Image (cartoon, rainbow, N blue to C red; front, side, top):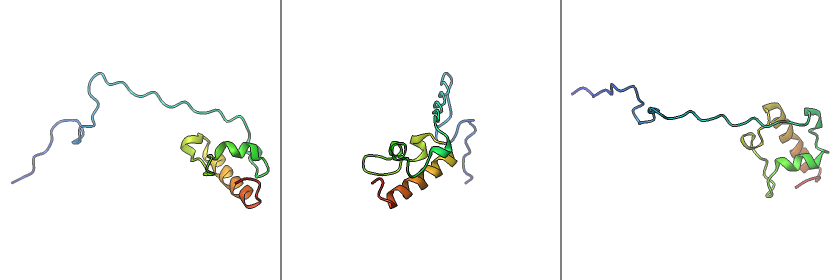
Length: 87
């Protein structure tokens, strides 16, 4: 017996948007008030803003940094940890 196909325009899992559903407003982009040169392993006060209380590095989803900035922050935090400037 052939399978029944769904002729509706909605997704088969019911994820289609019905009438009257508003689109989400995009998340506001954070303002980066420092240059990429300011991200350095010696600038511990800036680096501490991107680390949790337990010492874990915050992901880009929470920091809102551009990708090159986030990579530089990760590298700087790891260097500062190696030199025991931060935990």
